Amino acid sequence: MKTVLPGIYRRLHGYFGPQHWWPAETPFEVMVGAILTQNTSWQNVEKAISNLKKKKLLSLRALHALPLAKLAQLIRPAGYYNVKAARLRAFTDFLFSAYKGSLSRMRCRKTAILRRELLSVKGIGEETADSILLYALEKPVFVVDAYTKRVLLRHGLIRKDAGYAETQALFMSGLKKNTRLFNEYHALLVRLAKEFCRKRLPRCGLCPLRDIPR
DNA sequence: CACCAGGCAAGTA
DNA sequence: TACTTGCATGGT
Image (cartoon, rainbow, N blue to C red; front, side, top):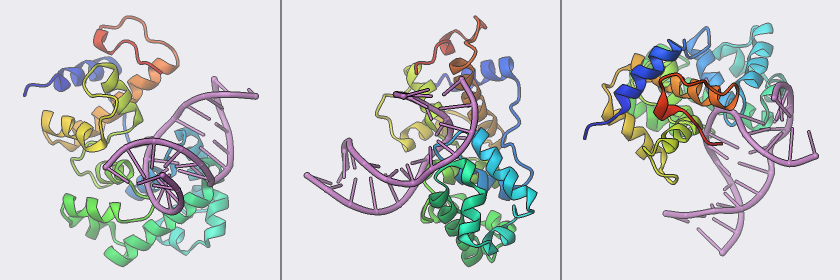
């Protein structure tokens, strides 16, 4: 089954250029950001990340040692701060119990195993798990989010009730399993969707990708 | 003022 | 299995 996905990618990349995702200094920062950004604007996440950085707490060990109530207050701007503090704690617990706190050890495991392990952590669902796999661990896994579905739905490539796995399979089977490609493609879809909600793109040669519904 | 943002888990039927 | 609800801040 021939897909239009490679063509769409070329047009997006040609028009917008590289997006330089994920915006973070370390893989661990990516993981923290992935949890903090759940149903929350990235702008608010940046404030929370900034609070942690100011106090030099954005490392696995420091974050794990931080009392839960303190953590919750620091990440307040990201919203759902009590829930997310518990989720971050569950995640660092997992990193220590499963990998002795070593991301290098973690990176050695097979992707399918890692994904199952991540999904077993309270507070990590499919999108968060895949964001961690792709953007922190550089595994070739396609991340599906609300933006991805919105764009695909608008262009008739999925149905309204398409599930996560179904949507992801479109990309995973229609493209080479390349980390760099999946990284850029997801970021470009987000860029396209955002561009539409804000400025309203002029005619730009992206005709099938012109008009994203709200 | 209402609505939204790079979800997820727990509860209900 | 398939809904529904709670979680919460800051920007538009």
